[in-house]
Length: 139
Image (cartoon, rainbow, N blue to C red; front, top):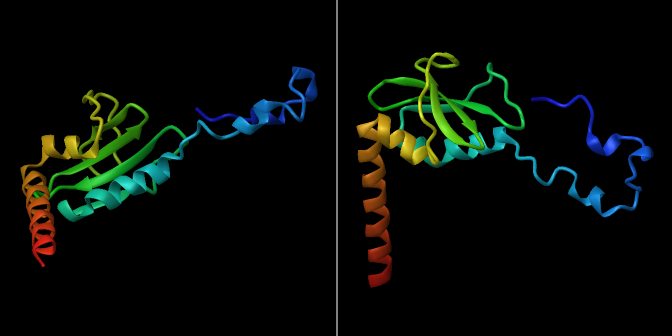
């Protein structure tokens, strides 16, 4: 939901003075979901065929959309909100209101549920990191 006015722009008749402690809270509870979505993409891009934040679907402070193609070549449109991530479509930039998939707390959980190849790639990357740590510890 977009706001047409900033609550901090209201006139002084609200009872909140300019030097009020409330002015320090401007923007502190607002997350930019586009930035969150970019972080999600950067975190797991190594384990999927393609993944990017949608440029055609609207991003807002409370929602962003991510397109992902798994290594199995399945395409999904993901919705990212404060509730988590969920599949909302089965093609890039597609939101199907009839799709009622559960939210996942993490992108790892979501991808693990839809892509065995992701699970394998993630496991292999984890093993490689552990091996690197082990060899660093022995040198």
